[in-house]
Image 1 (cartoon, rainbow, N blue to C red):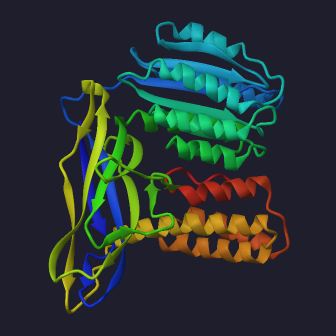
Image 2: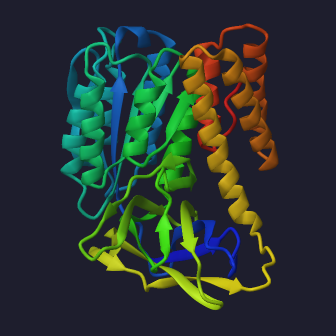
Image 3: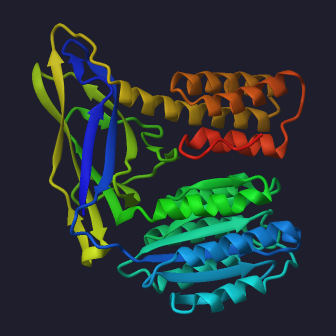
Length: 418
């Protein structure tokens, strides 16, 4: 397994007469499968809400979806199941799959009762999942239909950060319309996973299968993007780095001992790119082809039991010319639009929380136009519908808000059903 690392500037030409220029650097990163590669075992943890509000069809469909995942696991894969209401317990301790029928019987015995304590479920799930993380791809599916009424949201975020430190990826699934989208998004973002919205019970199996198929393509783990900037080149001060594919996430970074910046990427999928967008400023540079940055990826390869592997250093060049002519890159422009769509929607939500309905509607319309520019017609429809409802003096339902949040973050999954 190797890493494909491709940096591209939104405009590789720079005006030598300008004392300050801004550029967006898109960095595409993916794992490249090789013929000799063996499959890496999965280490999967299901953290399932079985509180009283899940009673009836919701819990039955979740059990059905969990059973189907058990059937899809291969010999050598590991599974943990943690369930929670206002307490949490380990239903299936972390183990290699040997008796799938026993596991399915335990799942089928679940009944709905009690309140909701997401943080306790998360704590137990992370503890169990960590036991099987060596030489595996470790992923959490956390599903809930409610607020964390018996728990503490700050604890959830601390556990999500802990999971990230252990290189465990957290995916969150909100069921119905009564879950807290802010906390589930923050958990998924911290764990570099994905946030999914399951509006109706009959979507559960489909969504579990979609996520499972996605994690089966993971080839490399614990990846970090390392980069250094040349003199006279700097990062933007406010939110300089974001992931724009497969989901949009604002990414934190830290400085390594050698002075390079490190951005945690988590898992890398085979032949499916992760795109990072960095916002940089360049001072006046001499004419000619100039290196402005160096990039490298550090990663683990569980298939070969190797950790801390490094790609070759990849330099990023700009062409400094006295007679400037733009050389815009359309693919990077798509990444810029994806980030703009996300941030415009975030601004709309902030305005709505402040009671500025007109301002929120305007920002949603702007986000809808951005989505259309990038060819994301599904998102454009959802965003414009929400804007129109606000302009008509209507309230946005919980379903409207959740669909708006999901389409702002990704164009990979199917547009949520109206």
